[in-house]
Length: 409
Image 1 (cartoon, rainbow, N blue to C red):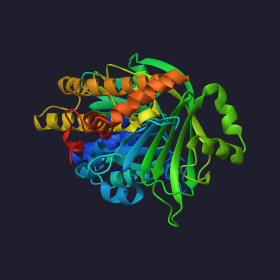
Image 2 (image 1 turned 180 degrees about the horizontal axis):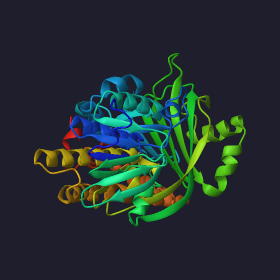
Image 3 (image 1 turned 120 degrees about the vertical axis):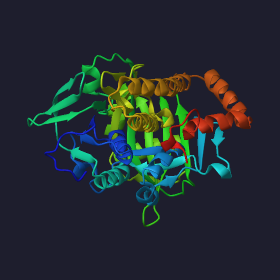
Image 4 (image 1 turned 60 degrees about the horizontal axis):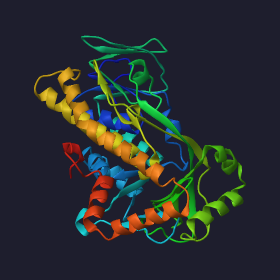
């Protein structure tokens, strides 16, 4: 990130400097591939002091990625290991406890998004192969036989050999290229907040299912004064969201406590409440002429299993490996064969995870005593089958299937 901002040419032009786009730039830099990252946001605002409630679960495979990219040292002091995951239907009997063996370590780590961004910007700043253009709007994109370009609102033009769309769910790069993802709206909204609580979370992530949607309590690192802290992701019907957000603080906390059944004791807000609508989109094609999509630009899913960012990071690891392998063979980064290999590699995984989260959302959203009893019976069965539990844990840890080198320990 030490090159002059006026030097706007690189091997890869990455549009979107969020968690996925910036990690891609760092991975490419480690492989000797230059990039220009263009983002509309202000890094100072993205890393301002304070906790805004947004947090991410980083799977075992994603942690391996950060370790292999040299970021673990910056991140580890900020994270909270996930020792187990408790899955329950409305806190009724018949829950599943996912707890890995001693040889597996944790199920992942929880981080405040701000801490992830701070570490990522610092890692990028150490890489001369990365140019980071901030507070910039892309007004035109061109892809041709010999290269790509992106024109900014201030008139600058960025040139390269491959364009990567990493702008998230509303990716204009994807839409302009004519991709037609399958998409639908769940009619739900996720309410996000940070919580302080009386009792320790014991590094347990709770996924509590109610007919209106999942209610997740995700463990975060305690404050310096040992105040216990977790992230709340509460799914409510869209029609009820405005009312829940407008509740006075004490009434809001009372509703949260009622759904938690007292597992954390007395609670208070650690951050303002925010929310976002929940929808689904998935595109089978993620490449075109000198174009690749990564992260939410290609697949946006329900946060029910906390897999959205992790799937995007698996995109990163696969694309870095494909492009670096091609570079060793003397192929340029925009080569159609390399992009086709990336698409084949990611197709099955993204489809399976997106489909599984959608099925879970619908299955646990069926109201009534009988559906609840059937779900709890099935969960009790899984609890008694170590092999099946192991399968689900490997999926949650991102350690199944053919893994790119960057995802391996």
